[in-house]
Image 1 (spheres, rainbow, N blue to C red):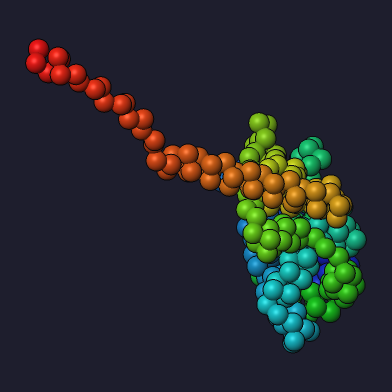
Image 2 (cartoon, one colour):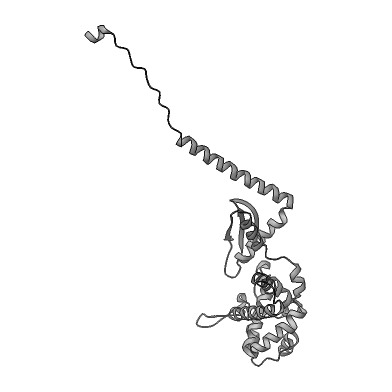
Length: 274
């Protein structure tokens, strides 16, 4: 039955079925061996992630011969994002076979995308790179990841905000930390965006990257063009006041001290003779 399911989802008849079974075991449902080793899909996920990135890079390089490196990088990040792969996994029905013991909704959000990467890793080991290359380009990218739609969507809010700050000579920093209930099985982070030291956005996610992206997204959603103008005016006013204060302190400290000379007493002849 599982052979049939793999064939239906990926169009492949497994040689080593155990690889595909392993690809579906989330770390929350790890099998613990006698020596303490945890068996789950993380290693296959790591491999699959690298394979997908390699194939998508090759695909975009050929499809967009006149585009810049920045364009290709941004589009690839959209194609291989957790959100995109999670959607693919659900659409092909992979979510029905993932084995997990996690009850945390936030931590389950990308489990299926991770399992998809692990399955690609398993297929790579079982069938080879050429097979995976054809599978992704001719089936997954065509049927489930619409490149034309990705071209019109905006997902990398962090890069856009950093680029804007650099262009307009403003500093930007992120204050990111994990939640008090953080654990390896249930990771969760909070992030704040600060522009010129002023907090302008906030976000949360199960990774630092996701939390910072959501914080930047909150900036884009929380400010209209008019609000952004007001914010920048406020930052400019703060800069101006700081510079004015520094200038005033410098002037006061560098100004010469005016000394008051006391008039000399006039000595009379009688006083001299005395």
